[in-house]
Amino acid sequence: MSDIINVAIVGAGRGGSGILKVLLALDSINIIGVADIRADAPGVLIARENGIFTTDDYRELICRDNIDVVIEATGVAQVVADIKASIPDKIVFVQSKAALLFMSIVKKQEELLMEKEHTGHLETILNSAQEGIQACDNTGKILYLNKAFFEITKKTPQDYVDKNVFEVSPHGSLAKVLKTKEPVFGWVNVIKDSNVEVVSNASPIMVNGEMKGAVVVFRDLSDIKKMAETIAKSKETIEVLKNEFNQLASAKYSFSDLVGENAVFVQCKKHALRAARSDSGILITGESGTGKELFAHAIHNSSPRADGPFIKMNCAAIPENLLESEMYGYEKGAFTGAGRTKIGKFELADGGTIFLDEIGDMSLPLQSKLLRVLQEREIERLGSNRIKTVDIRIIAATNQNLEQMVEKKTFREDLYYRLKVINIQIPPLRERKDDLPALIEFFINIYNKKSKKDCRISPEVTAMMLRYNWPGNVRELQNILERAIVLSEGEYINPQLVTPYLDVKPNRAANDDSINEIIPLEEMEKQALQKALALYGDSLAGKKRAAQELNISLATLYNRIKKYKNEPKQT
Figure (cartoon, rainbow, N blue to C red):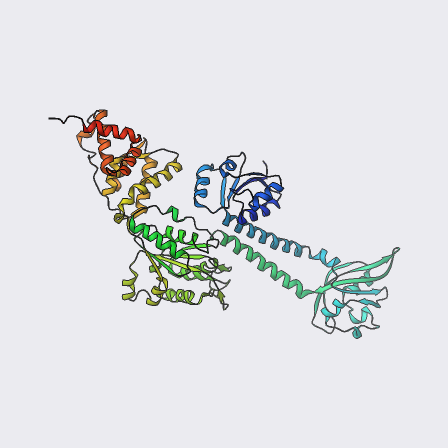
C-alpha cells in the first residue's frame, strides 16, 4: 500500500499558493493538480513551474483519478458546497483555513521534536562542542584554557597560571584520564572553590601510541537542566496545540445560505450585512430554530475578520462550574485536575470572532467578567497573574427576553447595552410563511443529494405545511423534511410521512374509507392542477412555479387550464 497522499488544490490565490509551497516540500505528498479561474494566479504559476496539471475549472480537477484529499482554498460558499456534493466519501475534504492551521501545527511539532532529538544526542554534542575547553600535558600541567572556560567557572586566568590539574581540580575528569589513560564521559563535579557544577567529557591525547596529555570539553550543568525544562515545556505545548486544533473551526455559512425573500427577513439580512462591516457588538435574538447561529456565521464571513478564527460557545450547554475555565482557559495546576495548560475560547478567538450562544443562561458573576472583556479586551487565565490582550469581536445570541431579565436583575443592564450595540431580531417561521416553498425546495435538494434520492413534495403536503405554525421554526422544518426523505419509498413525499409531526389534518384523513377509492387519472390531474394554482397563485410567476412543481412545461399548463375551464359542468 502506497504512503503517498495525492492532493488536489482548488483555489490558487495567496492561501492556496501558500498551501502548495508547503506541500511541495513534503516527500509524502503528490500534487495531482491546481485549479483557479485566473490563469495568472500565484499557485497556478508555481504549479506550472513544477510540471503540475492546472485548469480553470475545478470540476475538471476533482474528477481526476486517485485523489485522496481535496483542499478548497477559495472560500466561496458555492464552490465549497459543489465540491462536497461532487466528491465521493472516500476523498477527504479540507477547507483552506483548517489546512493552513493544521500545517502550522505540524511544522511547530516537527521543530519541537527536532529540538528534543538534538537534546537526546547531548552526549555526542558534548564530545565535539567547543564549550569550556581545558588541555594539559601528561604531567597535568595546564596548557590551554578558552574564553568559555572562564565564563562558566567564574574564574580568572591568574587562578590557573603555572598551575597543575591535580592541584586545581584533583577530582575532575582530566585528573582521572591522566591516571587511567582512558576516556571519561559524562563526568559530573563541582569546580574547586566555587559552587559551579559541570558535566564533562575528557580524552587522552595520543601521539604514535603514546599519551602526550589530555583534553576536556565541559558545560555548565544548569544549561542541561534548563534544556530539560524546555523539552518538558515543548511536550506540553505540543499537547495543547493538538487539543486546541480540534476546537478551531471556520465559519461554514454565508448570507447566500440564509434562504428567504420575506420582507422582514430580507431586512434582517441587510441589517446583518451592514453590521458585518463594523467591529461593534451584535446581539441576535429570536426563537429557537430561527437560524441565529447561521446569521453569526454569515456575519463573520462577510467581515474584515473572515480570515480569522470563528469560535462557537453554547453558554447553556456547559456546566456552570466549567464555563469560566472554558472561556478564559487555565494554567497547569490552577485547580485540582488541571494537569496541563488549556487555552480558553477568548484566546482561541484572538484576531477573529467568538459567538456566545444562549447568552441569557450565563450567571451574573460571569456576566461581570464578560463585561471586562468587552470593555478592556483583556483576559486572564485561571491560575495566572498575566493579563493578555485579545483582539476579538463578540456576537451573542439568545431566545430569551433580556429586557425582562434586566428588569428582574437576572441580567446586567450594562452588559445588555454593550452587547446590544446592534440588535438583529429574526422573525419566527410562522411570520414568514411566504418563504416556506423556497425553504422546502432548499432542504429537499440538500437531503436528496445526501440520500441519493430524487424525491418531490406533493402539493397537498405543501398546503399542510403552510397551515402549520412551526413552533420549532426552520430547524423543525429541516428535521421533518430530512426524516420524510429518508423514509420515503416513492417519488413523492406523501401526507402520511409528515402528518404525525404536523398539528394539522390532510385534506383527506388517513382513516377515511374514501382513500381506497379509485380516482380516474384525468380527475387526479385536474386536482393536482387546481392545488398547484391554489398554492402558487394565478400570476405568471405563480403559473411558472406551478408548472415546475407539476413537472410540465408552461405551455402544457396553459393547455390543461384551458381544457378543464371549457369542460362542461356536471349536473
